[in-house]
Length: 79
Image (cartoon, rainbow, N blue to C red):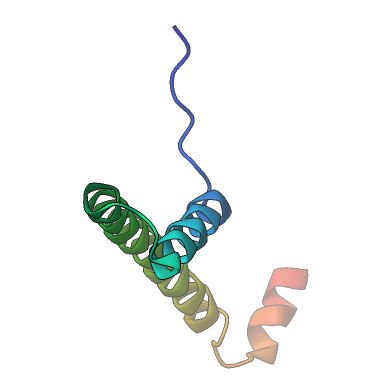
């Protein structure tokens, strides 16, 4: 049996948008609305966590790249 592939951020966001649209429509039975609401919360948390992780990674990479320029260090590496 093949392992389930974890949905991408874009797939989860797309599904979240579908859930929101269905809930905003207001034509679902109560049980379906509650089920979709729970699914939406799970998707929202998952997307938020992934965005936070990406933001922290970008911030870390940016901070590492902001070292002051040291011409002596560049000369030493060239030797």
